Amino acid sequence: MAIAVNIHWQEITPDLYETARSRVRWDEDVPDGLVLHASWFDGGLHVLDVWESEGQFSTFIAERIAPVLKGELNVQSDPQVTMSPLHRHFVVQQAGGAA
Image 1 (cartoon, one colour):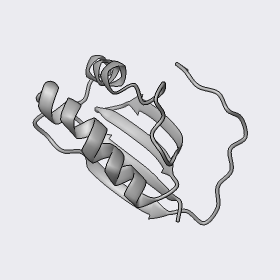
Image 2: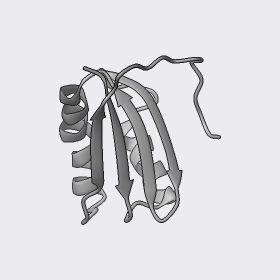
Image 3: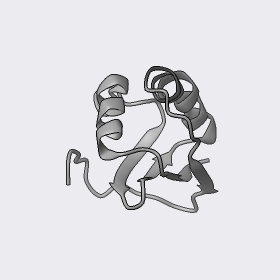
Image 4: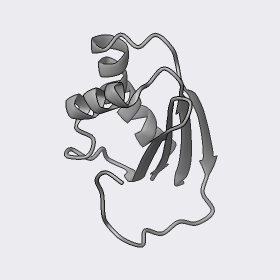
């Protein structure tokens, strides 16, 4: 079942996000199951993702995000994460990049 994932991570700055993005390369090597990713900064990092399943999200975090953020970049805090099952979703346009 598809899920919406809302993340708020106060410790993550724009510079730290860009460093992680360049190392993890999630926009070049798109993780299995990721449908949509949007991020912004307002009192830390906010992310809204849509995933095909909770398992695919969990695998991406464990195998690609945690080793970089917690390991290489030594981020100490944990994010606030809320997952909700989606009733329905559709993608209007395939586009990406900076806003």
